[in-house]
Amino acid sequence: MTEYNPFPAPSRDLCGAMHVHRRLLNESMTYRAQRARIENRALQYETGRRASVRSGVVTIPVVVHVVHNPRTPAQNIGDAQIHSQIDVLNRDFRAANPDVSRVPDAWKPLVADIEVEFALATVDPHGAPTGGIVRAETDRTGFDSHDAVKAAASGGADPWPSDQYLNLWVCQLGEGLLGYAQFPGGPPQTDGVVILHSAFGTTGTAAAPYNGGRTATHEIGHWLDLFHIWGDDDGACSNDDRVADTPNQANSNVGKPAFPHVTCNNGPNGDMFMNYMDYVDDDSMFMFTRGQRERINACLEGTRASFLVAHQAAPATPAAPAPETRPVEAQTPGYVAQDADVERLLHDTERLTREALTDIHDALGLVGHRFGG
Image (cartoon, rainbow, N blue to C red; front, side):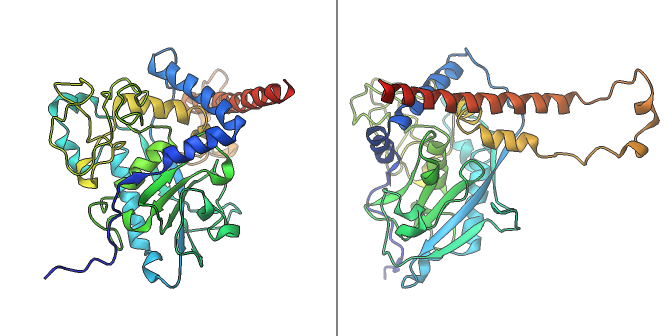
């Protein structure tokens, strides 16, 4: 007897990020200008003309908007399912996932710890305590990649400030979509990631073969400016993901490919189909590369610098003692305080803030010049 599955997997493993990207390129001159600047910056990091200065792990606050139709109770996923997804993200982005051991020997030296972690928000935009989970009822039966889920007015849930939180919307998606993300540089009111509820986390409604939490890993990769590993050129072998250490490949891979799978004359090792930015089943993807980390660094020190600045500005240690309780030697003439780390963090924070403001100012200047003609 075949067991009934109330949450069947989509017939296609489809990510809608490129649909959103192309739509915004067609609709928004500002987005085109921003994307040009973002690509220029990423190229500088890839070619070594600019080096990353961030050190240590950055933690990104996350808010999960569970948008559910009361007529389908399963859409209102439980807290345990949400926490299971955060756990997966924190393993995958730190190269701490057990299945990373399955990376072929040829590519083991390329495996990268992205040094990014995720945590459900503990403070909401108004400064009140929160668990980082928002639940919103909808009368819609499902959503697509046109962002209706991202606004209460269209049956979804409004985002929290996208320069302070990674917004994740979990809902029922149609059109065979597992999820989609908005690349950096897009409108702040739609910035974030959308995931099908049955492809989110590892428990609850999560359904095989997408019950490993890797859809969110893939989509957040886009949110941090990674493209699909095959370059979305429909098998032409003429475009790639703009990362030097990922082999050019003809198209997406699905299911559980056997190594090596050679396309685009990329032998002997073939496609890096086990990369998180391909389309294989959750249990067949398990790595980011060093080149992808550099591209993410360019994003975190550029368009998404607000997360890095907030992380560096947050106190990592207890505040310094009050003057009357400071050590005697600190009050002695000629004493040099051991505050190099604090000074460095302040310097980096100021620099990253200036760079982010300059990027925004220059992009707006490009748009204004274009309109002024």
